[in-house]
Every structure is written in C-alpha cells, then in structure tokens.
Image (tube, rainbow, N blue to C red; front, side, top):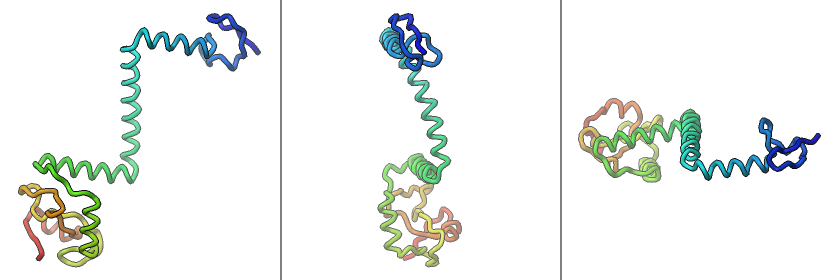
Length: 153
C-alpha cells in the first residue's frame, strides 16, 4: 500500500512514513533538522530536561543494586570525612593490603568475622582518613571502642 507525502509529492510505501506523522521519514527528518537549527536554545533545553529525567531514573535504579549500595555507602563515608575536614583518603587497594597484613583478623580479638574499618584517631576528634589512621576491627570491637582513641600495639 502506498501513500503520497505532501512535502515531496512522492508516492512511497506506507512503511516509509512515521506512525503518526503525515510526512515520509526523509521529509520529517529534514523538517526536524531545520526546526532544530532555527530553535537551537529551545531544543537544547528540551534535551537537558530529558537527560535530567533519564539520568535521575538511571541513578535511582542503580542505587538499588548491590554495587550501587556499596558505592553509595562509600560516597557517604567520604562526604562525612570531607565535612569533618579530611582532605586525603585511603584507597580500596590500601585497605585490602591492610587486611592482608592483619591476616584478615580483628586487631583486638583476632576474630575473622564482620571485619570493618576503624579510625584509630576518630574523624570526630580530628583524625585523618589516611591508611595510617585505619585499623581492622570486627563489628563488636568497633562498636565497643566508639569514638575513643584505642590502639593495640
């Protein structure tokens, strides 16, 4: 089945027309490009709005994944450290090295379960977020230590 495009006056197959447009796809694309050139700022603003909505949806979906939760938690910790005046941070590689040096054991009770990062001098007391100020503790020892300065030598 054929249809006539009112713009180019050519008879073309119906499949070459956009579903709800009266022009063929070629004419429609030409008209769109002319409109974009004539309305550049309006087009850019529409693109920005569309991208913002898409990125927001994508980010909110990513935050629900396991990797997203981990990265979100790490980002929140870095933000808290920055807010308390720490400018330098330890890397994940340094943390893994510290874990290996401690044989994946808590520095206080030698437990191998639920290991966490603990700041020897707490951030709230002016400590840094560098690896020199980090020790490996299990959840129980970290919770009992609180924000006190306690180091096992």
